[in-house]
Image (cartoon, rainbow, N blue to C red; front, side, top):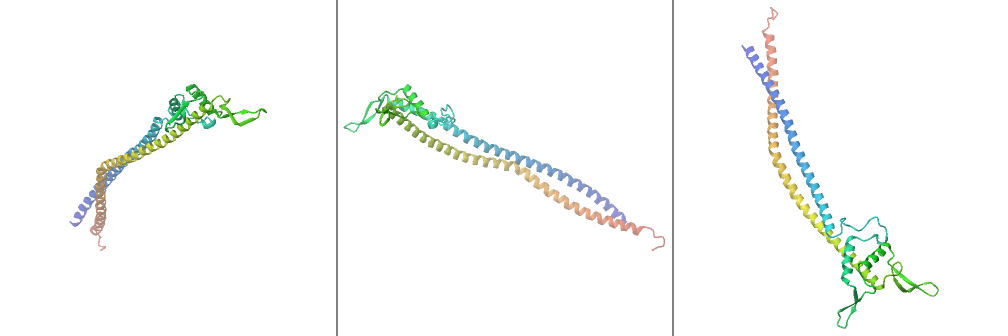
Length: 277
């Protein structure tokens, strides 16, 4: 009777071991799939974060280009040629536009000190100043020929104390030269101020973009946590269940081994000894 009970327990434990082994494999497969799902979600949000950072960088670059073009310092309709190695390396569109306005505002007049009341006086620019003359002088400036031309003495030697004019052949008057160079100096100074302003605007925008990016990344991180939370909770439950199954399986295998050993000994004890005992 005891042997039959042992045999019944052995069969029951074997079925239990088989069931627990199957569950162990099933939970292992489910954990693998869950791990892959979590990895896919993490990769998706990592990709979103990378795209967010690239977008922020692109917007910063585009803003800088926008500010530069808006102030006449960018590549849009740019007159400056970086491959021009002439005198001064050419001039930018900003300087050209500034000079155009400054020279047009002279209306053929230039400062000539102050009167007895301290008010500024003006005189006509010798030789005049219009768009044609301004263009000619600009061309000479870019060629490096807008400089003083001196008179020659009786011996055909250059007399540096006597300037006959300015330009390649001295065709421009001292007044024209003074007005042109003054406008050039003012335009270049205005350009430096515009560059500083543009850099400040770009820096302010970059600071704001950094704040925006930080907020967007925080929001994205919160979305990722919300998406991962149920998956990770389910993964934890699966791992706990798998550990429980493994513990039960280990215990069932130990009991099965003991029962099998007891059955084996019972078989030996019940075998006929034919008078040998």
